[in-house]
Amino acid sequence: MPRFIESYNKRFGVEPEDPQPAFRPLDPAVNLDYILCIKEPRTIIESSAFSYKGKYYQLIKDGKKAPALPKAKLTVLFSPKIGVKALYGGVVYDNTAASRSA
Image 1 (spheres, rainbow, N blue to C red):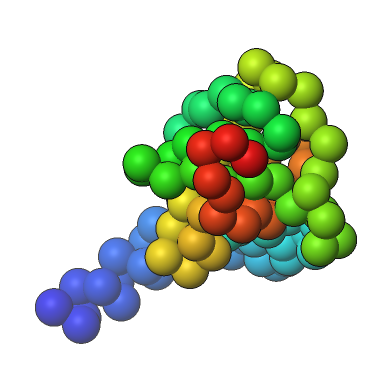
Image 2 (cartoon, rainbow, N blue to C red):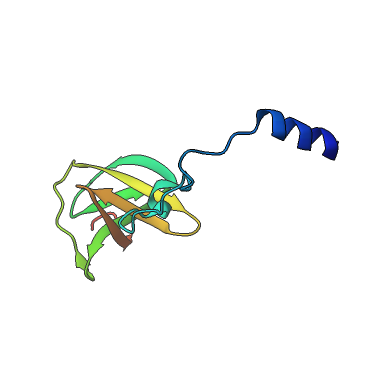
């Protein structure tokens, strides 16, 4: 087999025109954890809260409740690595457990 591979490569092998690697570094602004996760649509209930898997969560930004319009759409991002996050208005928010009356 090694002789075959060597003769095959001599016959059909070609040097690349551009020796640069085909892969580029990932843009630092891209967070793969927010891409490679489970995504589920949800609706804001009230007071920046939403439900996910039987629990209520409230959007948090800088340690405070984030403003959000009632009945607005958001996307829940979940993975064991990041836990539960929420994508709302193009921003990924942390959240905290909330009561139904939030």
